[in-house]
Image 1: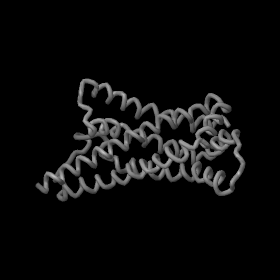
Image 2 (image 1 turned 90 degrees about the vertical axis):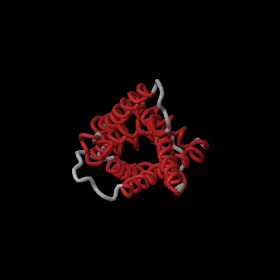
Image 3 (image 1 turned 45 degrees about the vertical axis):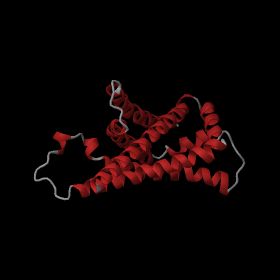
Image 4 (image 1 turned 30 degrees about the horizontal axis):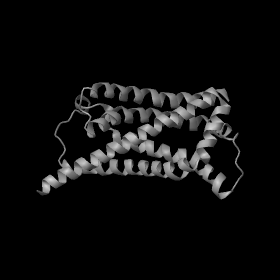
Length: 221
């Protein structure tokens, strides 16, 4: 009975982890779409960023939900990793990881930690200055400032390189995480193979677009 309850709790944790991952994947698609506009049009990027920066629904509802989703996903990832390690206290005498699983699936915790560090840098670069600008300094709204602030962050080659490496590791994380999330929520049907392919494309295209955005602003401004 206790083992059954423990199994059910483990399954619920994996499902919750998967749902938070799908939620964050949706956010990534929106985020890269907005950022890519900065390559196409400075004015449109400023307008879109200003709208999102001062829209009450986005600022006071969606942004806190997003913050909770990020924290929940990483905490649950650490919990499940610790749980899996505890379930196998005795290491295998011989284990060829590369023959049984991809690098991305075997190193989700490593790529996750790098992404967590990247989020810290991203908050330092964009979120904290935004909070200071609007709520601490109380500066009057300026709908033309966003493009310049974005470009300024990519002047430094070291910072640009850090962003690019983080995006590449994000791709590895998504390569396994997208398909794993779909599997955890029970998407085993005739569309599962198609959805898995969509996940692999997403894991390549979205991080690649982030890298292109960073390099474009580094070399062109």
